[in-house]
Amino acid sequence: MRLPNWRALHFPFTIMLRLKARKQVPSVFQWHRYVGLTAFLFVIMLAVTGVMLNHTEGLLLDQIYVKSDLLLDWYGITPPHVNTAFLTANHSILQLEDRLYMDHHLLKGPVLRLRGAVETSNLLIVAATSTVLLLTPQGELVEQLGTAEGVPAGLRAIGRTRDGHVVIVAAEGRYTADKDFLSWRRYHDRLPVLWSRPRLPPRALAHDLQQHYRSHILPVERVMLDLHSGRIFGYWGVFVVDAAALLLCFLGFSGCWLWCERFRKRKAREKHWPRSRN
Image (cartoon, rainbow, N blue to C red):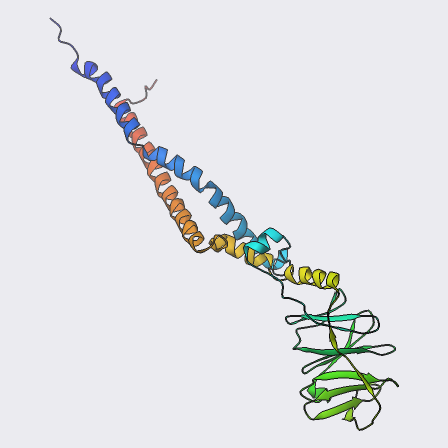
């Protein structure tokens, strides 16, 4: 009587038990797949931002500014209020923080507190606390004068007489300059001076300058850095990116483990069932 092959009878039950165990406990391959799908978006984000940051100078990321209102609101960037302006015959001079504007044109800066502006036949003279700017009617800077060029310290106001002389009020009194602004002397004349007085800025102009100021604060480089580190998402964003880095490490180790397991099983199959040789 031939005895049954117990190994053959036991084989189907072994297969069933293995399939049941696989359904209950996810395999490393399944974890590798799930983690890979989860980390996919983070990998793309880190790769794109990393490449862009490596070429910041070539892409001019530090010179291009974000203009999206949604992103600027996310960063909490708001423009300063514009309460005063100095008006000449043809122009409006305003200051937003350390930036100086003539109409819609951004002038050379930064400057300290704006003190006034007067207009002559061919120049626009803008006075700040320690600086006098000579501008063309188109807003081009002709010269910037400071204490080194003889401008009296502690400038407080600027005006002009009816005959065209520019007069300033400094810490030590009143001064006037020659026609080329090369030298300054005490002003002792009794001619009336039309002083530059602060006024309310035109509402439309103030709004346009606020939008310009707001859209020239946040460089694209800063956004790329915050995306790369996760800080753009707030306090927890950094930990999310840290978790993504750990997931990438897991993918690397699990991928190596799966490759080693597949290599080991292939060697085991070749050992037990060697290929037939002709």
